Length: 171
Image (cartoon, rainbow, N blue to C red):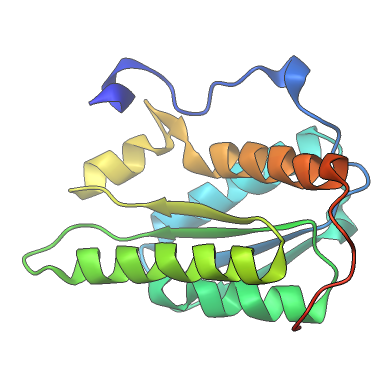
């Protein structure tokens, strides 16, 4: 597995665009809160590090990861966002529930991103066990919340650079 070889949160900070003029939404699941809240802290810290203003970071908490796409949609419909980030953690258990939830969240975020033209970032851990989750929420493999923030900044900058029309259909 590639993640065993490196810190997932490592990126070239000098190539990172400024987030000073950007607005972000973060939807965070409360299920596995000790993991998801660590992802959230890493995410917010990274956004602020790259210039995002605290008043331009809007957060919504939801019960679990399944609710993340709906929360992202609510964030997008309530404020002008340059990107939204979904943070959650679905640990594999004795049933296939994780597959259903992970696929639903990923598909929901893709559909929302395509429908709105606003980047919707998948920051959901999909580990086999709790230790793998902890390793990716500030442990030996970094913090996927940092990775999600960096992705959001880069995608928002890419959208601005591409000259995408500002008019949208829908919400």
